[in-house]
Length: 76
Image: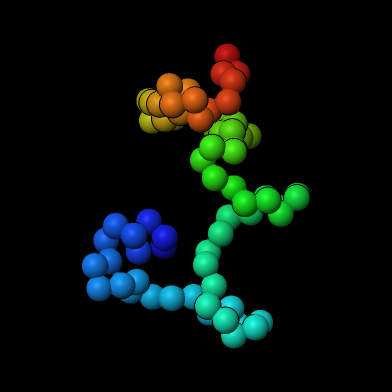
């Protein structure tokens, strides 16, 4: 939502979030289920999952992440 609100919503956000627990406006955030820290592209590493497989799309994404320094270490 934040990306769209910043780059695609000239008149303002098309929708807002309200936390029903306290009634205040809320921002959507992705946090670590273990420590509660906020997750950003610069503090996470993408790793293969149990259902992952080598395919053209996954190979391209992995190569781009590694070039940008965002993919952690290669597990090759």
